[in-house]
Each structure stands twice: as C-alpha cells, then as structure tokens.
Amino acid sequence: MIAASNISLRVGKKALFENVNIKFTDGGCYGIIGANGAGKSTFLKILSGQLEPTTGEITITPGQRLSFLEQDHFKYDDQTVMDTVIQGNQHLYDIMKEKDALYAKEDFTDADGIRASELEGEFAEMDGWNAETDAETLLNGLGVSTDLHYAVMGTLDGPIKVKVLLARALFGNPDILLLDEPTNHLDLDAINWLEEFLINFENTVIVVSHDRYFLNKVCTNIADIDYGKITLYAGNYDFWFESSALMLRQRKEANKKKEEQIKELKEFIAKFSANASKSKQATSRKKALDKIVLDEIKPSSRKYPYIDFKPNREIGNEVLEVHDLTKTVDGEKVLDHVSFTLRREDKVAFVGSNEKAASTLFQIISGREEPDEGYYKWGITTSQAYFPKEYNEEFDSDLTITDWLTQYSEIKDVTYVRGFLGRMLFAGEDGVKKVRVLSGGEKVRCMLSKMMISGANVLILDQPTNHLDMESIQALNNGLIKFPGVELFTCHDHQFVETTANRIMEFMPDGTMIDKVTTYDEYLASDEAARKRTVYTSTEEDN
Image 1 (cartoon, one colour):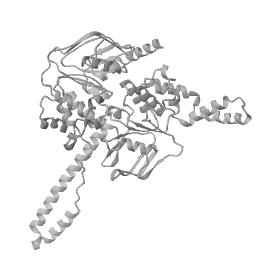
Image 2 (cartoon, one colour; image 1 turned 135 degrees about the horizontal axis):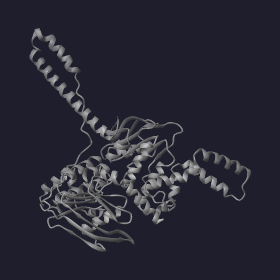
Image 3 (cartoon, helix red, strand yellow; image 1 turned 90 degrees about the horizontal axis):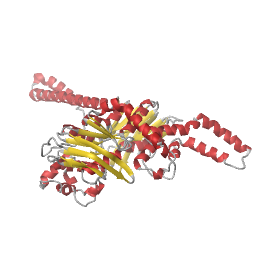
C-alpha cells in the first residue's frame, strides 16, 4: 500500500496540489488522468520520492519495494541491456555482483565462504537463479530481440531503449509499480503485451497514460487530477468518463432546483414582508433562504481543441497507385517491392513493429524522398497534407505562430488565420508567441492547424498523437472519423486505430506487407496467430 497524506506542492505562488489525501491499496491498478499541466507526472515523482512536496508525506507499507519507469534514456548507456534490466531489483543485482566478486578472489578465506553462503541463501530466496530468464522473458515480450540482450545500452536506438527501461521497471515483481506514459514509443504489439502483463500483475500499479484503450483495459480505478485536487473513481476510464459527467449533470440540476427555490422564496419575501398577517411566514422563508447554498462548480482545466478537416475539393475514384516501391536505408532494405492501390473511401492504418517502413513510405509518397525502384502516382483530383514523425525543423524559425500558419494559407487575412489558431487553443496573446519556443503538444497542434488550413483531401499522418493530451487525441480522433477524404496514418493508440481505420496494412520485418480491408480488432482476431508465426520464423532465420 502507498498513501499520500496532506500533500501540497507550490511552485512560486501557484499551488499545483493542495492537501491531497489518497490511498492506493494492494492489487489495484490506478490510472492517473488530467489535462496537460495538471501535475500527473509531478505527482508520480512525489510518490516515488524523486520530488519533495511542500507539505505532507508519502507512506509505504514497510518491506514493500517500489519500482518506477526511468525517464532518463541515457542514464545506463555504459551498461548492458541485461544488467540494466536486472538492476530494476537493485538488492538482487548487488547480491549477484558481490557473489561474483567473492568467487573471483584468489585468496578465498573462511570468512568469504561464510559470506558467500549467506549471499547464496538470500539469492535463492529472491529467485535469483531465474533472474536472467525472467529478464529475457520481459525483453522478448516487449519486442527486444535476443541478439540485443547483452548489447551496451548506448548503442541502441531510442525506441529500443524505452522498451529496456520498461522491462527494468517491471523486473522482479515489485510491490508498487509507477509508470509514466509507458506506451509512448511502443508499437501496438508491445502495448498489447504490456496490457496482458499488467492485467495479470497482482501488485499495485499507478500509471499515467493518454491511451484510452490502455486505461480501459488495465485499470481498476481512475484518479482524476483537476482543480488542484485528486478524486478517486472505481472502474476504468470509460466508467470515469460517464460517472464524472453524470455527477456534473446532477450537481447542475441540483443547483437549478435550488435557484428556482431561491427565486420563489425571494418573491414571497418581497411580496409579504410588509404584510403583518404574513410576517411570520416571510421571516420563516428568510431563514430557509439563508440555509440554501449553491454547489460550487468550477470550470474544468480540460480543454478540447476543435479539429475539423474540410477538403476544398471532392476526391475522385483514382487516388493513389503504388507499384513495386523498393527502398534501402543505411544498408537495410526497408521497402521490398511494395504495391497497392487506394480507393476514395480508404482510411488506412499502418500497424506492426516495422515502423521505419511506414515512415519511409510516407516520406516517398509525400515527395520528400525518392524510391530506389518502382513508382507511385497520385490521382489528378487529389491534394495531400503530410504530418511527418519528425517535424522540429519546421519550427526552427523566429516567426510568430500567426505568421507561421499564414504562410501556408491561401487566405492571408490575419483574422481568418487566428480563427484556426483559436480552435486549436491558441487564444489571445498566444498568436504572437515564437514557434521556436513551443512545447511538443503546441507544435503538434500547429501542424494539425496547417493540415486543416490546407484543404487537402488526402491526409498522411505519422504518429500524430505523440505529445498530445487525452482531450486533443479525442478531438483528433473525432476529426478523422468524420473526414470525407482518404487517410493514411500510423498511431500507437488502439482505440484511435480501431475507430478510424477501415483498412489495415502491416509491414513485416522483411519489408513485405499484409493488406486487408477490415477494422483493426477484426484484423487482430483473424490474423494474430499467423502474424506471430511469421515474426517468429523471421527471427529464427535471422539467428
């Protein structure tokens, strides 16, 4: 069990939390939600002891071990993957190292033998003999191939490092597990594995995530951060969404009834307060009026952008023909004779662990790269808007947000451009903010504004939900569902893919592709076993 008692945190004059009291009991999986800036990650740092609160204390059941997902991706660059994972249980790792050091001594004494015996007993009690096997199971489940298990962390790509650090947090069956955005940078297969792991995990989990499907799948409780308070709800994310909305409606209805009652009492008092025969009744009603207190209903800190892609031109029947596209990147064949044809009603999700292939395809069909072989041809009625995975170079400028967006608009009127920015939560003085200093979420909203203002009838989006809060993800999800044009996209959000796509394409590790007209859930149900066999066979052949 871990509990927060009277936790307050002040940053300057601003109170991020005020007298928070919450208890996380053994065996529950708690999802921490709230708007960007509400303090979700900050609260996890307080729970883990990485950050001291202004007031209050954190208590943990004596003897319980707490583990958290490291956010510093360079912290273990000089260590091997296996050592990094096993250090998730630092005490076990220290025992292993002390044992190795003792047995390596040339002058092994009787005292060393006694100490080694003690260590061996503790090592066995902690199931140390299975440590490397357990670590391998975690790494394999998250998609870290066996040939990397003893590689040095500093040689790994960023997404692989994230998986290793996640395996480290999960290692050794911690009593309390704190996870801050664990699905970030994970492919959908790895997310599915993590979901099953947490569903079967018997100890306490506290997780911050923007992935609605993930929260629905794993959470037994939701802790909602709003108004500087944390309110605990039983159930998953959907249950929180419905119950919190119901509670708000009930409070508004109760206030409405009170307001009607107040109006009636005031009218009676005004009419009969001077009437001697009614004076006692008027006095009684004054007392009743004084006792009526309206519930304080604060506006939520959550804000939803308005995302609406309106194409300037209806798309024709001929959309895109891709024929035998082949591309090698840094000596690796990423695309191998890829061919497909898009129809005007297609909304295509590219899924699977081979994300480099999808990104490379998007770069080619958007005109940013040339294929080694093959060709592609867009229909004459099409116009494309592209959201690349890497977009920071677009903001390497001293332009204001308004000027930045104006350069992409056919209509150069400032009021028109600011209308788009206002819908994307850039209000008032935000319009004169320099794009160079924008946060990750603000840059994404700018990129989406650029796509909306283009009037394109084909949208190409490579991981557009990265850096977005849950409200913005929901708004983007809704915008793409109602978009009448063609979509090609990648996304790690299961619910986003399931509700948006009507066609699934998956690049396999060898660069070939599976293409099915179906929803994502139907694709997983019908092809999951075949896909796993394909990946397994490919891995075996590589070894």
